[in-house]
Length: 377
Length: 223
Image 1 (cartoon, helix red, strand yellow):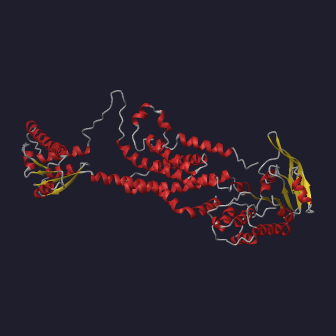
Image 2: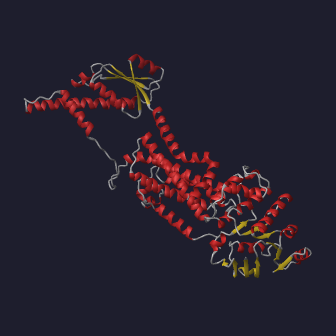
């Protein structure tokens, strides 16, 4: 292996900028796209102003709930600032949590708790106000429940006293610990599916896998360049057969790519809080073997490098569309489950080691290697 | 000694070589001539173990080709007609590349000396900037890295200047006389063949080559 490393280093000395580019592309491109998407999402949030006229736990909780909404960006303002920004159309709308909010909720009064402002260009006033109303209704619902509990407790056991705040705190505690409302929509004859958690993982690793396939394919162009470089006759008179030279170089490339795959896993863990597990490492190793073996076999089929590049880009596009790594294909795979096994990314995205394509590629490479060489007269 | 016994080579029904036998002593330079398609390159391919004879046996110092192919190959220096070098590498990198993959370890100084012996002094130059003659010299130098006993050259000087031709020929003579190498040389340049070779094997029945060679006074064998 040492001579292979030494000779490959001579090649890499000439090609290091492109080598580094393709090695880091999957990590950098994935981080870039994920971050750009976040920035775009952040920019596309609806700007609204909130004016707090009182500083009570209930008013603060309402503000916290509004801020937690992923689709709006909240600015804490005074009423005059809010009006000014709405006039200049820098805010879509503004809402004033009126003084005495908490007390009015406690008293069961539902009128004039929030005042809303909008301009002639406000496009999200109605949905945002509906959302805020729903939060206020939660508060009024809790208050009503607290009064009912207090009345019931007084009737059943007059000695036991629950304060309004105690009951509200308990309701909030239960609300935060338990998923009180969980709704899944599905057809009556279908098994219930919940991919919510997986989808987040799929997007990052799916995106990375697509870029990784592309970089592996384009890094494999050396196979075509060297196969048709004219040096082939020399391999009969050196220590390595050409096939052995190719296989050992593919192993070397795969090892280097695996190091960068591992760096990607660390990068995603550090920047995107993606969990790293032994199962993931196993899936990455299997993915690397599949990817490198597939790229190697594909490159062996080509004589002209630009045709190989064209086919590589087309193949990556096809995998992007059909693998479900980026676009969901559950409807299709639910109907045709066998498509799952043909999907080259399926084992990796499900963090499995064995995959159909890996086995097929390894068997084909084994047969190709065992067949010997034309040079071996 | 290289001993070739009744070599026959056919591709389908077409017979290329028919019962060729000869032997070559160490230190000898033998030229292979003949018209295009006569079978010179096929014979050289067989001698280089790159093709199998349909019939016949070849021995190198009593080792049969078909029984000791791997060992035989270690003793062969094959110089292909097409230049087989890395164009984007320097001379030094080309020599280092093939040394790393060869059967023997050579120092950088030894590799450099191989090039100097052939008047190839552009050690640090990228190959694509070299003249055709320089590339041919490097093509030959790479084939000599593992210190082979037999050197097989398929038109090694085609398309290069006279000075480079002379320098390559002088070096081959030195290899034969001082290092006892067996050299088999294909060329269409009759002057080159006559001046360089001790013996000439003429393949095919075209009298053109035989007439030229007979006047040279060289020992000629025809097949």
